Length: 97
Image (tube, rainbow, N blue to C red; front, side):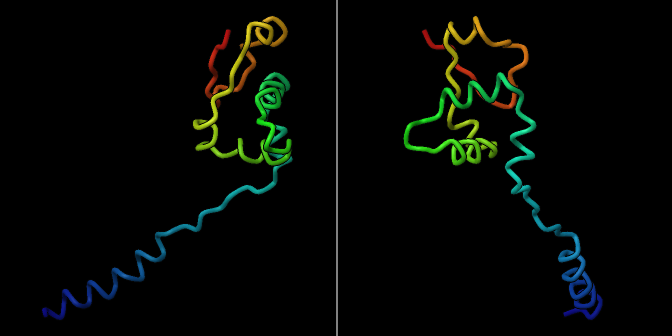
């Protein structure tokens, strides 16, 4: 093997390790709960399945994958009482009869 190529590969391995950044997650649920406004939180809690507690449900909905797996259903009664322009667009909403 060419010595220059070997030296290049030996130098490349540590550089790729430095390029990797650790993944940081915000585990403070109170900070995320404050980001949701009142209409979004009301729709979230109205769509909470019975098998989950409120804390577990809100923690689950912090993750973008769960937001796409659990669409939030909005009824006509909700549209009458909530400001729909204030709903958080990070969630998927479905209109139900």
